[in-house]
Image (cartoon, each protein chain N blue to C red):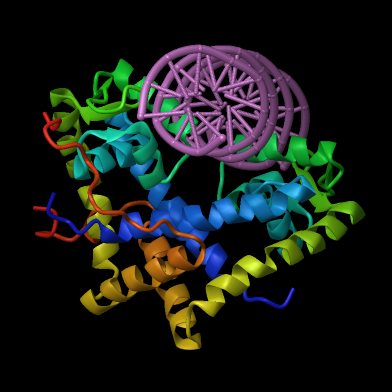
Amino acid sequence: MAVERAIPMALRAAYLALHRRTEAALAPLGVTADQFVLLATLERGEALTQRELARRMPSDPSTVRAMLVLLEREELVRRAPHPMDARARTVVLTPKGVKTLRRLWNAGDPIRARILGALSPGEHEALVKLLTKVATALGGDAPSPADSIPGVEQ
Amino acid sequence: MAVERAIPMALRAAYLALHRRTEAALAPLGVTADQFVLLATLERGEALTQRELARRMPSDPSTVRAMLVLLEREELVRRAPHPMDARARTVVLTPKGVKTLRRLWNAGDPIRARILGALSPGEHEALVKLLTKVATALGGDAPSPADSIPGVEQ
DNA sequence: TATTGTTATACTCTATAACTATA
DNA sequence: TATAGTTATAGAGTATAACAATA
């Protein structure tokens, strides 16, 4: 099997721990961890189309739609016709969504604090940089055969 | 909101990229990324009980059972009565499971190579260390010494 | 009494394919 | 023709609670 497997497993363990702790912390507010990510994505860029939202999550358009239906039922987001493109719909946070999102950030603070508490400032910066490298290497971009490393995968 | 949010998002992005690429690579073999993790966990410690398997994944016993039912249907794993504890069942890879697992590792090699290709040896080591710190800080499971059952490994 | 596993149940996320409407 | 979104459908993982059998 030849290729180091420590990183994938360590990455999985760290993410799963984060995910589960987040689920538990947000559950009292009736929002899942993934829904939180969606809401936070909306906060960063207002009036996104569903497609753009899916691109940024990143996720699948039909997955995003399923999530939006749930969030709309809770009145946390609202979908409106796009002003220029009659095919598209824009998604925005409702006032209730904004308020809930603020609470969600607060509910997650202890988790982020726990992570930071385990790392020095230098480690923190390094980790973000390394994770970004990994994500980029595995990125949605077309897997160009030229990028693979000859000789490594025997 | 006070606390840095770069790490959680970077962690999520990296894991999701890994997960999706893995799903795509293993799909032709009819196994999901999570099922692969289960099979690989079995490979590392044979004749685990379902409970111990769930602890190591980590996952929920009822989740693991659902996965085992699927894997048993594919004849990749087999469950047998525990020799000492009549309540428990041991789970082992079938010969077909062993063979499939070998193919799964091969199918995933290019993904791991891609990760390694993006990192220097020092970065690779650093990343594993940092991820382990994060997982530990978030309640990552402590790996326990081998508790496989002597004499049961097929 | 505590633990192992099963069963029933429910929900979320995921994703493909066929479809409508619009660009 | 291509794109945005919907609908139908399916499957996989997740987890809780009630339960039986056993330690």
